[in-house]
Length: 352
Image (cartoon, rainbow, N blue to C red; front, top):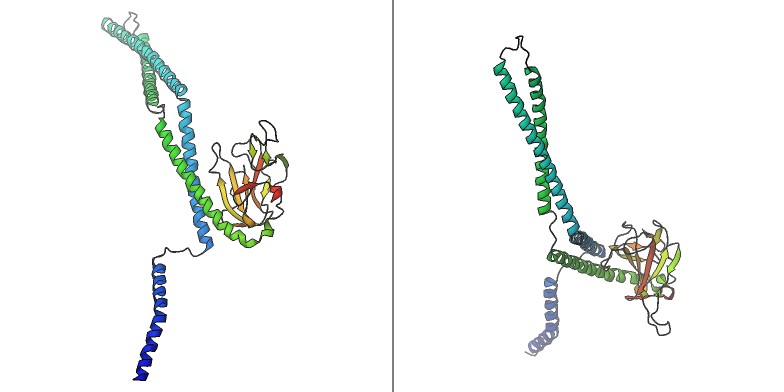
């Protein structure tokens, strides 16, 4: 009995110790069963984010083109409508002129035919000695009949031109409504937001990868392109004086003047977070490349030629070519705009 009691007490103690562990294991198994599936690896994650970037960028550029076309039509509506009206009036004048000529030729042909018929009744025998004008009249009738046929064809062509000009005026030159433009603007804003979120996702992914490179890899950033500095980092003008710091315009990066097509190279080892048109430009969009380096350092290269030299998610080595100098976006000449950000804030490249 003592042994049985000891055995039962041992089982009770063991159950009390193991019960919480079993409950926790059961909860973890339930969470694992209901959790969303995780992608197999970083490469597949980068590929899916890159696909989202490309889709959003394409939608944004389509909206840009449609808005530009609608605004151009809206601004030039009066001029285009006036041109369409002038074309319609010209076609009408040509039609009326062709109709007048055709009617005149028809009347003349009818008169010649009546004259020929009268001559035939008066002089039925052309072989007689009496002289008649029937051969000449027949020749004139044939010649005029060809002219009438040609004039009728010209009249039909003129009438077709009038119809085409009228349809053009009624359909093509309608003034685009403000609502149509607003719808396209809303589509563009949604695409810009989608692209910004995709870039943010790739920045998070590549920042985690770049952390393994070591902080030393982002020290002493190299100059990204050969050329002269046309605009330095910082204030470009003052309202009152430099001591008060009332900066008229703050330049977030460094502008380096260089010819179109010259290679732009990575300033340090890192990863590409984005390569495409900027979703943050309010005017003409610049083609940009964003690279992420160790220590929370990011580099932005803007106004590049629109050629995808690199892809988002891929690793780049220091001095590797990532693009070429261009003139995309709002720019007065070929140059590279180079920004350096540390933990999301722009800094002077010299002070990294």
